[in-house]
Length: 456
Ligand code: GLU
Image (tube, rainbow, N blue to C red; front, top):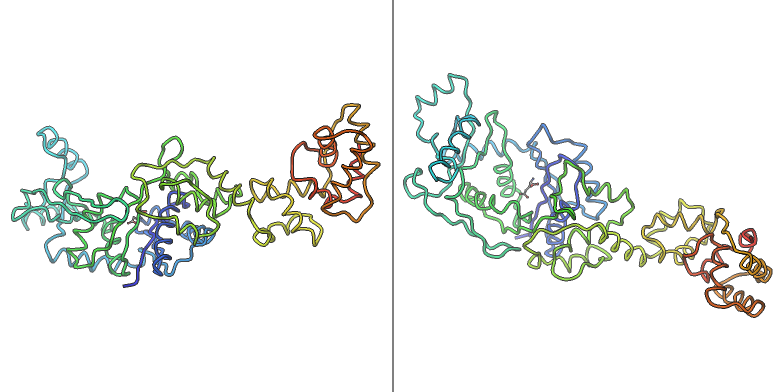
């Protein structure tokens, strides 16, 4: 069977780096197995779902390099969920409940006082046909619960029922169905909560592997029971740990924290973001992967830590620098095209400055330093005399990679200066800065005319 995974965001905000972790674990898993990746929008919550967010999600995934094989919207598949709900009702495992939220809360409190677990006591199962008619006549509409298979003959005497699976990340897992309330699948007004549509779609779309955050571990026990009740093949599950901010808070699409949009706008490279999203919390050090194929080799689900992983922005800066320092000219050429670099020089310019860029956008600063006007440096008297004398000795053009050493050897012979006392005043005069790319490479780009104009 073709390996088929799905990434199932609700379009209620922009993707953040934690969502990307889930998307990439799925994508890389599918790539490794020559499988298919489905992007499924869990948009049954009409109030909070927005098409601008689903469009943004497609765009943000494309920025990372993820192209779904298929895109589905749950809001367009309601008929399938209706049919499944009818089948469950006919089988007697989806039953109507009329309690209000307040009634349920009161019962929970009562159970606690009696030392019982605060789960739903299935009181609605005791309603007769007449009771239901009376309640409906009062204007009450039912919500619908799935009857968990956690009893032998009497649903009011649940007994320990372990639902087990071998998790791709966490190994043997098991959830005791008698510790849970029968889940509500359909709300009073007829809309679906996440659970049933997710299962129906996983079945209908032939999903073989469900890889998601470990906030869904308990759901999995329930979902397996519903897969079975519907006669659907149960997929393999894998639950990875969640990312938090450095101060330990969870990430949320609604707050926009660490959204892919923001990171992209701040000038981070997609592969820096992708590498961190996947590698944080794996055993081994975090390294910038040059592309998704290379990242796939590191994305070993069985190596994911069980604990929460913190997202450290300093790591992202480090990875970004590593990527930028190694970036070939071809990868940045379109972005350099916007800078005022003389034609034919852009490649040499990039080679000269890339090791001094934390982000590709820093190239603009260096383009200013090389080709624009610089703020003239201030010199003490002896340095000023020295620099003026040095500028008298600037070689004639053409200039190349040897010009700096030819020039500075001449200056050294004429003035007796050497080392830092020789180089630093020249760097400051030529660039206005006391740090920066190798002058051996910058000097030919600055050229004789601009260099002379910078003579203090
Ligand atoms: N929409 C759900 C979520 O974002 C999907 C969970 C799942 O993958 O089953 O949490």
